[in-house]
Image (cartoon, rainbow, N blue to C red; front, side, top):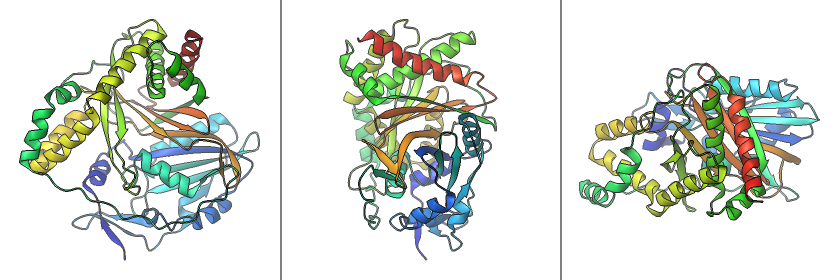
Length: 422
């Protein structure tokens, strides 16, 4: 039986799931035409071999914990068919899926197939635990399992590459890193975020919303803005505008809001690594009235953090700290997850470029969602694919009233930025 120890990062991610907070992410693919769960199972059966982790379950009672082959693995358990007709029903179904934990006695993923969407469409809702794959790895898996460039033959199956290991560093490395990076660590972990209505204990119920826009429009705004920006800068500015609209509506101050922006540190030679990311913390300037001023302020923030390699410095700090003292690392991670450090998480993972197909049918929409955290009542996950960009909003339904107001504010900001650069 194959047995692979949990990495320290996988174990840390697994430990974040507790109480009313789940540990999975979700990909929602909408395709043209009707595809049944049976067809999806047959398709996956031909593609699973290069991804052995999807056949493995957790063995948590072992010391140390490990991934082991699931002797009872069956696609019938993981891929099921659901009856949903319209967009509202799909959103309710996806929200319910985000509330429901994955079964730890079996591989940590599940796929719901909805072949009955109005307009002759099918939705595939794939949940996958973050301990099994971070955002970058999940997209790589999706490209092997489901997504194919339109008009091309499916790629041949390839064996999964071996994982690479990190070389431990000691106290001297920790001290050298700390000496190089006091300004970065002070900026990232030493600045307090303001209190907001999003700072609430996590409840059990979820609500989701999606915003979809042409990727070329965000690219045009980024290139033609007075201060040249990136697509991610435009996306962050749009999220800030959506939150600004919501805060104004509920009578809360629309002031500086600190967001955590995950940064992928995957390398080309480790495509099978489950979790390899860090983060930077960015202030969204909600107090600015002008959309271009908001975008310029966000661009200045992200540019400074990239030039200073904040994400890499944070990763090195936590890695070295764990070798020095696991207890110190736990305390530091607890502080870094606190609403005193950031208000919400906004991730952006690039998906496949160009037209895509799933089971031979054109991909119409691709959305992604990530779970909220304790005392962080909203999570925004962004993904681009096939010329579109999607903002997936997952919220604590008991803490946020008016999630659609945030979504509408994001869409309006993209339009306003487009008009401003015309």
